[in-house]
Amino acid sequence: MERLHHRCPVPSSSSAAPRSPLDNLCNSLGSHYVMLCLSALCIDPSCHSACGLPELAVLATRLMVANATVAKASIESALAHAKNVKARKVMRSCLQLYVGAVPRLQWAARSVAAGRYSGVPDVLEAAYRDVSQGCSSLAGEVALPKENSEFFVTAYIVQAVVDWVKLSIGH
Image 1 (cartoon, one colour):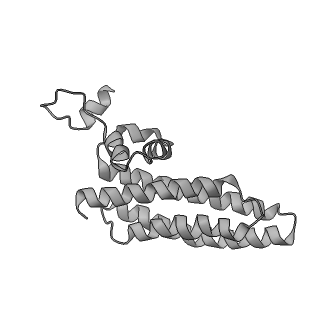
Image 2 (cartoon, one colour):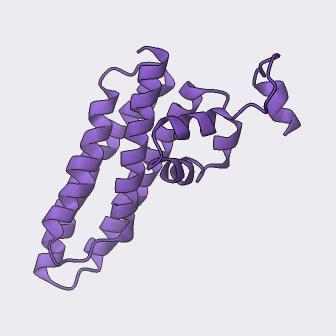
């Protein structure tokens, strides 16, 4: 905890204990987001030591890239082990969605890390809408790997985080 005080500026005139940037961010998103926000971002323990909104946005977008990469790998594995033609067709189609999304998400993470937010929210929204939900729509009765649903939740939260950060810092 001491490291946090040396690393992050602490307001000098405060009667109450200051809330962390993470708490402020997740609470700012609205009550239905708080627990999802905390659980999505705090997969990486550095969420607690982030000094501000831009650092949390960088963390969030990097986590989204990692999550998409894991989901892509799980779909590759499911494709390799698919027992029937329909399952192979669904997994192949889903895999193509993830193959296209990962580079765009990497671009978004690099953009946020550089402080450039233009176009990023659209890429993030497309990730959960077109990729995760797209796979779910294609699947029908075919069981998708759980990582597809986990990616949806992460992408949904990260998009809200980046939208809020962008609005808050005036980009």
